[in-house]
Length: 230
Image 1: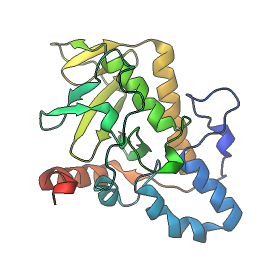
Image 2: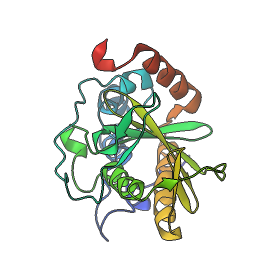
Image 3: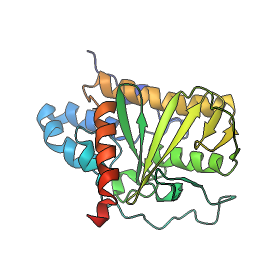
């Protein structure tokens, strides 16, 4: 399989000409410079608290040192971006240290706004910016009592205490209880990010975690309760 250049898969949220800063691009660059040995030795370490694929989702899900950082954007949003957590409690999207795009086969992780890793806390972090976009949309959610349309993407947000799920369709976003219409350009940007990231990982031999393994690790995390609580 021919490796692709990181430039082939730009960050949809970046300004024109900006350099992508996702974990896949950095790993591919390191692999090109030093060979597969460096990649194999560092991948697991980078995955905990970073944006990137993971072959050990249990370690990723248990990133209990990922304490939410102070939100620099506090007070700038039109509302508090709160959605129901899996246990019915409130989940603030600003507390997410990461989120996982869980497809039919692969589950790919992105660093969120509360990630404490300095390599993925900058303004060009596509995961951070995606959660910020989702937060803006969540502020416009309205009650929805009908069945949801067919979703194209399932996004599982993670913080140190819990997790929450958002469903994304071609013209809508939902937390399972409420729904907001979104325009086609906004959907297209997110879809392009997810599809390009998956294609980049696979093209460069960075096989992501299977969705089945992610589901098993997520269930185990929920059964144990908060990672910080033992």
